[in-house]
Image (cartoon, rainbow, N blue to C red; front, side, top):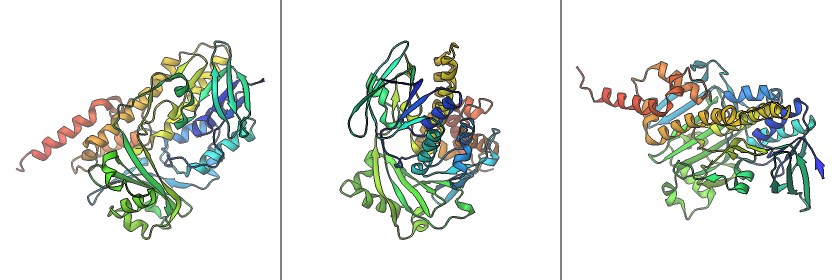
Length: 411
């Protein structure tokens, strides 16, 4: 039986950043990844908060070399109106830019880098069972040939994302409080990169469907449409490609940008993707990234939580392995949950209409938009920002104030 200090399940950003932090602190890490990289995964628009996680994990220079498209903000479009957010004008002090990153390239680069530094990376491995205990964890997995292997470690970090290995193994999954939605998306040729494209485009298509357009630096773009499942009923007899083409044609904003659509990756559909768990940690394990909770693609929060939780879990685990007492509920769960809850309020605000009302109101104060901009940049732990501290009610309150102002008769 092989032994190591920590087994990390999943070689996405959460797993790779966690493995990098632990390896730099001297621990022997084995990372088990179910797929063979490169592989596609959704979540291609980073947030500025990610840059701090990459720095802390010692992986910033790896991403810099990839030449990804720079992203300086987010642009929202509805009925001919544009609301532009520039990260350099945000309320919170932090990074003013980040990258639009095809995840197949980003994830592979991060995983291969940590492997080159000494992390034992195994692709095409499926974790089948884990015996959890107070002193040791025994992980059973099958390799690419189907042969069963066993490895003993002190602790397991589950960064398996949508695979949700430990939650499914221990029955930790619980229903999300967000309505089930569907996304239809793909990669297309997109040659018109210029200064105006250093943003992610979020486009309101109908009152039930919105779209994203994420330009990459290599003549491609990611395009996708999201909405409640019944909003796509008119596409149920079409293929994924036909569905995406029809949706692109329905957007007066996106269709002219793409022209004659040429796919560079086949279209895909996913549905009912929001997820949650009953607990984030237990004896011998901690969950990170989408293994804990996935909200919605609207504000690109998934990869931010993946990186943030991976780095934090690794730092806390390093302390624990050195004999220090760690309060996982306070130092990890409560911290991550604060950020998740903040973004959840904004996701709900997007879908109930209060947030778009603020975005496109001519009377919204710039101060408010700068504070909201910090949330869109991923700085959801800065409680000096009232739009973070009061996230559960401030959007609804401001939206009602704007309604009152609009209803006032002109003098």
